[in-house]
Image: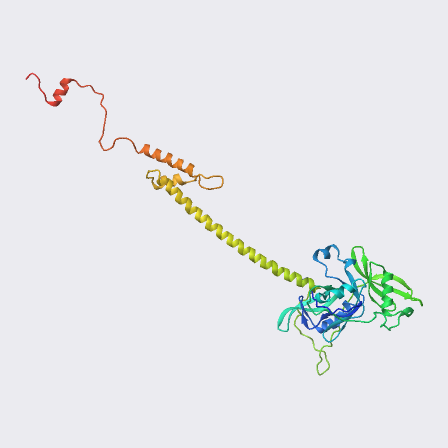
Length: 402
C-alpha cells in the first residue's frame, strides 16, 4: 500500500540564516502514522543526512508528476548537520539561503517543518489508538517549510555563524561546511551532495530520466582545491539489522525459534503535510457527496409526488369529459375510449382531441341503439296488398242491399 504523509509544526524565527530545527517529534501520532523514538533514532541520521535539501512547500500532485526533481525557485536551504535524536525528537541544523532567510523571519508564526520520506509501516496500537506504525525509513526526500503543523517539526533556535563554529579539520585545511560547499560546486548545478568523507562523496544526479544516487572518490590539495577521481558508481542506501542470538538450553544447545509469522509491512511514501491535506480533502468530498445524494433523493421524491398529482388530475379530467357526453358507456367501451390517450408535444393530455373522440363514440353508440326514433308503439310493418271496398265490408261484417 502506498500513501502520502505530511507532518509539520510551527517555527520560532530569528534573524539569520542558520537554525536548529526539530525535524519531527518522536513518540507521537502524525497524520501518516506513529513515529517511535527507536525508529527515528536509528533511521533518521541515514535518511536525512547533511546536504538534504529543504524546500518551500511540499509539491502538489501535478508537480510530483510533471517535475519530480522540484523547482529551483522553491529551494530554500539544506540540512547542514547529521540529525540526532534528543529529548523529544529528531534535531538537525538547517541553513537557509540569504534570499530566503528574510521570508522565513517574516512568516514564522504561520509555518512549520514537514518531512518527506519513504519507508514501511504495519498496523498496530500505540497510546490507545490503532493505525499505521512507521517501522522504518528507507529514503528521506526532503524536509520542507509548510503552512500547517502536524508532527512536531519546527525551528527552535538561531545558530551563530554557520561555518565559524565548525572546527573539524578536513583535507586541504577545510572545515566541514566549506568542503561540502566545494563538493557541491564540483558535482554541478543539477546534482547535490548527500554524504561525504575525506576520501569519497555520494551525490544525487540524473541518469537519463531517472534520479540516481552516485558515489565517487576525490582528492583535495593543500589549497583546498577539489578534484573528482575514479569512476562514478551508482549506489543505493541500505539499512541493516543485527540479529539477536537465539536462546540456549542449559547444555548450551541453541533452541529453535517458533515465533509466529511477522505481520506484512506495507511500503509507504511519507509526506506528512500532503497526507493531511488529502485526508481533509477526502473528508470534504465525502460530505459533499452525502449532501448531493440527499438532494437527489429529495428531488426524486418531489418528482414522484408531482407525477402522482398529475396522474390524479388527468384521471379526473378524463372522467369529466366522458361524463359530459351524456351516454352510458359499458366498462369495455370506456376502456377502449381511454386507451392510448391523445397527448400534446409536452406529454400532457390533449383535452380537445379526447373530447372529440368521446363525442364520436357517443354518436356511434346512439346510432346503434336507435336514438331519435319512436319507442313503445309495438311492431310496425308496412303492407303492399291492395284491398277492395267489398273486401273491407266483408272484414267489417257489413251486408249491403239486405
